[in-house]
Image (cartoon, rainbow, N blue to C red; front, top):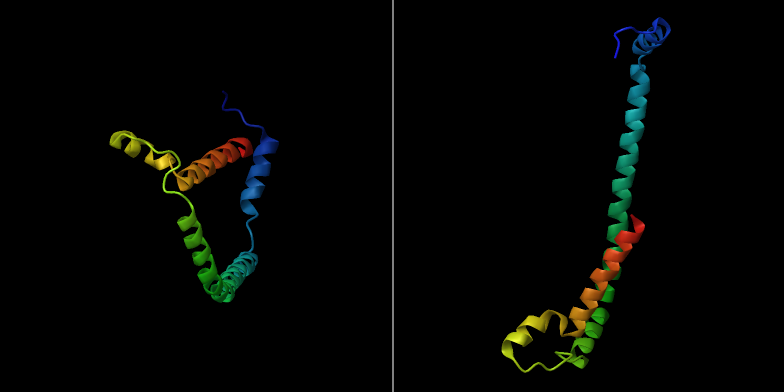
Length: 115
């Protein structure tokens, strides 16, 4: 490393330090950014207010369908004789456990492929 500096390059850096942005320009840019942020927040609130009744309207049939599905599915997939063995395999010995495990494996594969 040396302490010698190129005079032309040093002059360019000195000129860049002197050319600062105009205060009015910065104020306009910040006002536009704040206006965009307000518009985004208002849009999300409006969309949420519109979608809340739709979600409330759909919740009853969806809960009924889930209740019916839970009544039709068996508690366990494989009957296990031993109490300790039944407790050990309980998280994956049901349809919900297999579905959850499948979702986690699919999510891990997606993360592995996409990154």
